[in-house]
Amino acid sequence: MIKVYSTPFCAYCVSLKLFLKQHNIKFEEIDVAKDKKAQEEMIKKSGQMGVPVIEIDDQIIIGFDREKISKILKLNKK
Image (cartoon, rainbow, N blue to C red):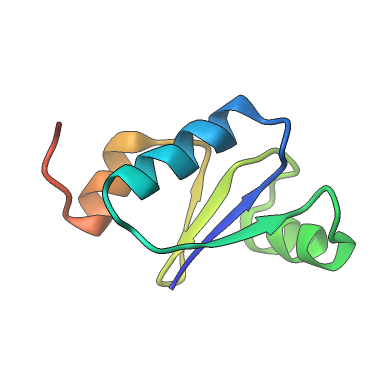
């Protein structure tokens, strides 16, 4: 399960979601601007208030770290 904690006005969040869609990776999008409980959950898991925060199988990635995400998901570089 992949969770993407994001906000609608975050350019890195938009880029991350586009990247995942281009690789046909299913993910749950969580808008922390609208969901206070999810925002608190994200901060507890990551120690960060900024977005995006990505959770892949209990691994937390802060920011759109394309290389790290690709490695964890075993994607070929494009």
